[in-house]
Length: 156
Image 1 (tube, rainbow, N blue to C red):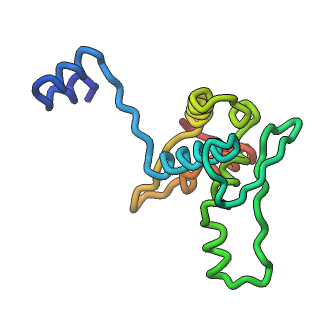
Image 2: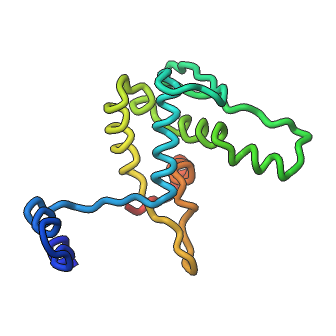
């Protein structure tokens, strides 16, 4: 069913607007939206547009651009604490940030960053897991970046 046929289900001004402008609906999976939001938030922290309450430290790498230090976990921590640690904002966000290429993480303005980030994210498929079906990975940006680095095939 194409966009025009889908808009036939609607009536009134909304349907007319959708048909006349031929809008394409592009929705990201919840996980992808959350990860994109996290990356944008880290950019704001890195550029002092948002407070750094998690004490994330950034450094400039000549070849890789701006990178974030991933805090280390105390090696004697309980398993439940290590799970909470690795799922915390500070760890997830720094790992997502460090997956970005130099062209993305060195963007000067927020608007430029969002555009470049969107283009970079478009090269990775957004295939959320569906209950009852096997998936290639967990659909996290980190999973796709690791798969590409290993040379695994990515189908768009």
